[in-house]
Image (cartoon, rainbow, N blue to C red):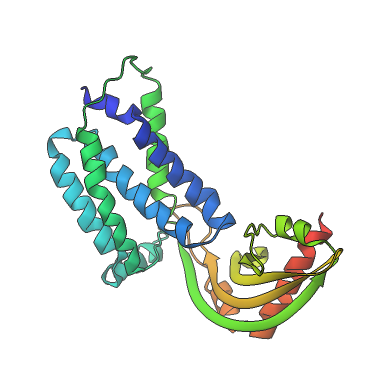
Length: 265
């Protein structure tokens, strides 16, 4: 099969779509373990597959180097490279989490899929090739924008009451768990600081028109770099501001954010 036709195979295109939708939407809307790992799996499936389409005589080498590069990328050993790049205005970032290395198990499946014989009865139009290449290239760098992430892990017993029924509050705060105690993640946006704080909250029905929102814990904060890949940087003043926030100040930001959700309804 012509190697160019590999670019049009369904599973590869689906992996690129999942990579984009996860990085640009799902991670922000549903900040959880699944969205955190999904990009590693689909990205590691698609990355060596994509380059193999152009260097078909070096497929094994591409897959081996992709695995080695991924491991190095996830190790703290690679931090000087990120520091050097950021110092020259190249905004790249990653989170050090050794559990991400489990994504390496996807490489054999990707390699097997590339080598699998598949008949494409209709030849795709050539105009789609550059479009797919551009989309793939963008998807591989979409998660590398500079950001400062720091764990807080603060427990809280702060509560506020909303004058809406439980189902409405669940919908507005995007909590979909059907359990006795409704627990979910909630993001506080600080737009003027280009930052966000992730929290864990719980909901409890007080009566037919009121719902109690409890701040269970304050998980972490992230200050996002500005710009694009080049000339992107993190505002250190914003980082220092976030570090100095006390628990009570975050609780007030939480209350303000929750109230704003329903004032804008």
